[in-house]
Length: 197
Image (tube, rainbow, N blue to C red; front, side, top):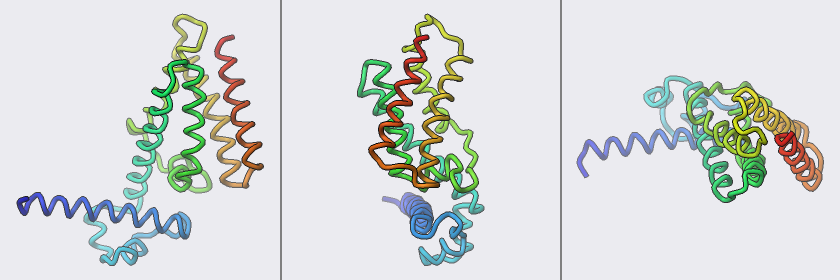
């Protein structure tokens, strides 16, 4: 390996280290504790060195949100590909969404502004989930070719209810896990039934 490749690999490792350290700080102390100085202390770098990789804390947040959207899209794509029945695809994708929210709580908070300011992410990573779900919605709908406006509205119906339930649980603790699962499944089933009307 040449020196150029070694330098590039080292830069990528430093960048990853900055992101991982940022997330570690957030998991231990919350989003309000994250600062460039704290990141520098955590990884034993100088603050100016971190600025060589990310121009601001907001740039770190944007990259973490982007990575969160990639993980969520991957999880939901896996759920979709595991089923051939579009109704089961929808259930599987939304259950993965739910699981993602609690497995990667800090990323979810950042991506969707739960308890913190949302990190605006209009990139293609954020659109993949929308496209995956809308494809299954179209397949379930009785209409041969439903309008994109109706398909989009149905996506937002699912997302509003499920994101609301996630948010209630992240912010206020919600109800017991068994009840949460039943509420979630009831909501998914009811919305999926409405697609056939």
